[in-house]
Image (cartoon, rainbow, N blue to C red):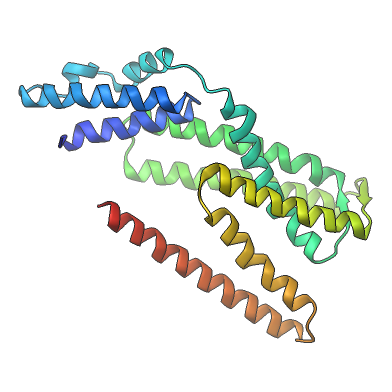
Length: 249
């Protein structure tokens, strides 16, 4: 069945809206399939999308949102896993470099920044999906969204640099435990999201660092090697992304 561009856009926006509202995936899929059938039948009869959803897509989305049950796993598993995954990236660099001193400000502030970022991001998803927003405004909002967590992380870093804050130092054994824990988080994320890129990316980023740490190569060469790996990884991910999109088209 082939829908008009207007109908397909609405369905895509509705799916994003319900996902950002932490609704149960199974119920969302069921409603989406029913709505797709209704829209197709309406179009075959020469009727517009408004015949099904009314003049306000936002109001219709809110009606559907009420009908779909909330998914408790969203806050119990999905959000904590995102936070743990992001936190694992932050501590992995320090652990590999054997920097065993951790600022309490960073340990408390970083998870707070992750939580605020998740809430803002899903609010942004809901807003863009439910409102007719131009591409320029959408791009601006995403750029603004990107600067908020960056500014907060920089704020934590500067505060930590210029103001003496409490810190804890862990033992070499605990540092090893931190590395193992971070690896387990990457694996858990890959298994939960069924996307091995959650393991591949940190493996490509950190394994070379571990190997280079125990070599006699000078710092300039190490930097060049790591940057080359990063560039190759970025290009590979970009090619993979466009290849996947081409297959879907």
